[in-house]
Length: 161
Image (cartoon, rainbow, N blue to C red; front, top):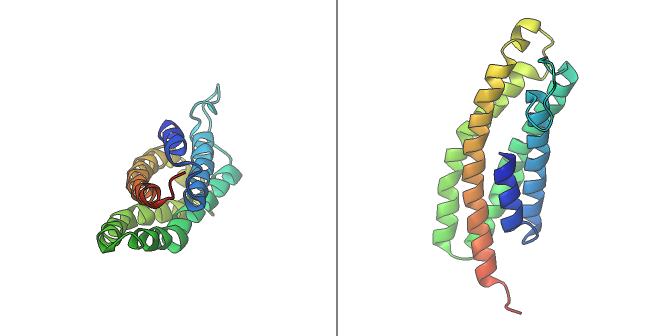
């Protein structure tokens, strides 16, 4: 996921403040995911669960990320696409319902782990992190389609130098 993010940053970074903000938030989320999942380059030599505090921080970032998408970024992207025609706006609007299920899964993860210190619940963390990663991968692909649409439309209408 980090490699795909790096490609997205190379392709779209610096083209629009909204896109830059979105990618920065995604990077922060992914870095914390890798840390609590023990993935490279944050892997540990011994296998152990992350601390409750690390999981709490990750849950906070996860909720911030999905909330930022739904309550700030998606509407702005749809409206920006609308500036380039009704078909662009409609296409962007059609993508939003596809993203909603990924939000629900992320919020369910948060509800399960944000406030718990129950070792039994924590024993399911690796499995749940893996499922969350697959879910977020789907979400990022859909978001990248929105980013591409915004970038393409923004680039087409940018003044030529």
